[in-house]
Length: 134
Length: 233
Image (cartoon, rainbow over all chains, first blue to last red; front, side, top):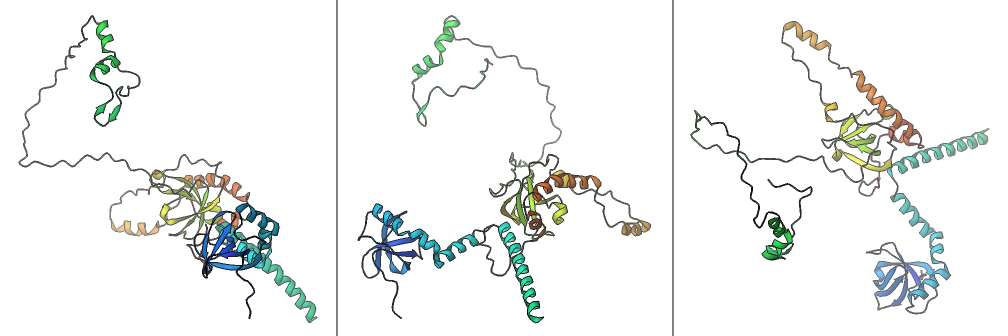
């Protein structure tokens, strides 16, 4: 099983530990065997241990240690945000966030909606069963 | 007494540091205008003779002097304030009751009473909770709000909820049997009227929001997988 996602300049990664938990960052340089220089449009460029990063499939085309402006332009050009939000991983994270922020009233409405949907599914199933058996 | 000003004057001599004023005695003399007052009264500072005191009644010598000095307790002028209301609880908030007969019921908050307790109503027709007092500590405030503008809450305070004082009955053998008969106390009609008056406008605003009525009718409970410290209410 070879590796598919490599640490390279321009690799987009997700921070999985620490103050910037949940942010998408771009690897902009490699410091040594364990650390990378990492940058994002809304944070100060800084070093991060690889253990804090989870690599994604997305890469962008940047020179080593680009200026903030070039980084932002490259991210816009490669459409990192939309690619992320359309990927199944990105969509799952969005759903998780939405579920965690639900109000007590929202949870109640969700329960009603689930019951309604289950009722409709069961009706259809009963119809199909009837057609098959007859 | 000299004539009092409408607003008392703040000191004309600001502090440089505590205990040291900015202006010297001679400067202050000029600032206060004492020279003008003196000039008005011909070089002499006006002096008012003390007003004659009304003669006080002669005190009788007391008949009893206690042997030991009795200590007087210190004076306590403290006026307790009603409990500080959590910022998340505003009139119209839906609260979840956590203890008591109506544990788990979702209820509408009306106002805070002077004793600090929260005045709360079901509304009665929706979930059976009447106008009731509830302690803030036994309540979860949700972020759902109901429009409460059409309700008049002036007449409700802690005295409204005081227990009815029963007249004492003399004990006699015949009385015991009678006392057993009337065990259930009827709720007075005016309290029922008050409940209806508060609830009608509330129910109208509740029915304006879809699903809110069913929400208030249902009880809250923790299901499997729900972690209270991670839930957003």
